[in-house]
Length: 451
Image 1 (cartoon, helix red, strand yellow):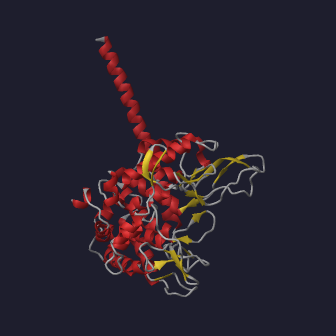
Image 2: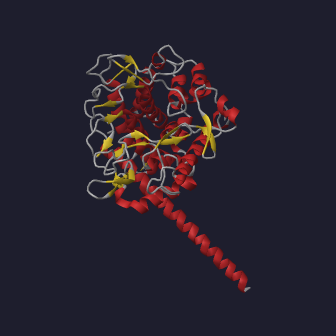
Image 3: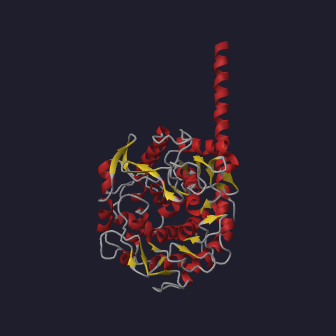
């Protein structure tokens, strides 16, 4: 009897500890979600709805960040941070801006051309920032946010009907076929000064959603053969024990997955490999983590709960007292079989944006980094962009901690937290006819797509 009571007491104790851990995790996720949402809600321009590329440093607007912001408002409604009407008004204002912004092939005085928009635009006027490119992928991420709003705002009132109409008009205006420039893969962009950029969307990266939307267009679609031209450039390899399509920075394994639930659906390439793209991103996450644990370059601070390489800010060399080490500023950091770009800089978004893929590791890492470094890396709007513990500074201190939040890195954290907990954004795009059509034309089958 005594042994039975003791065993029961032990079971109750460990059950209590487990419940307490789950409760603390939920509180953490709720606070991280609310803080990150506030970046998009508080910082959008009051007239245009444009999102800043970064804050608090003064910056231009990033159209990809605005796309993430549009989806962020929907998360805010789902979480109860704002009302549906508040979100609808903000979305309508933003879509009206893009619909009515000046367009054309002139080098100045416009926001976009042929349905595409410039990578960076002025926060208030919305006009092209300096001589940046008309960006295919950034327009694609903006359109993904617009389509998520089209699917969400489905009620029969004037505001929501206008949102759906504006979304349709903006999406169908994008001339994806023009951006192919008579080749099988899509160009990365165009300048009015000298035409199309030579670099094209090849290999596995964030461009997957670009092709899916281009295939799903009913006005300017690309040929289904383009999907096979895209997958033909993949690099499959075994990196740190994980067989997967390699691409170094984690954002390439995240961005398309913010909007599309790839669990259980396969194209011809993945059917041949016996996995899906979701599993591929899980393997990439595990490889990224294991690289940091192994830490071949011996950077300070890397361990099983402090990891994550992706495109992010960095310390640069301006204040560095390390004469033999070159630290990068903003750069696409990452680790893969054929490419390693690592200077000791960790980005929380590399972990937060991967939480659906490997929650058992990502959760512990997010909790650990916040607890260990506190206000140095976590503030008003959640995790700041990046930090580097290896740099010795000229003033005698050690370590660099970014002061900025970046919109394109905040978005994956917020959206993937929501997808992890309830599949919210994924479920919205499952009922969007353009996304569904694009997936089917790319040859995807199985799972929710068949049902």
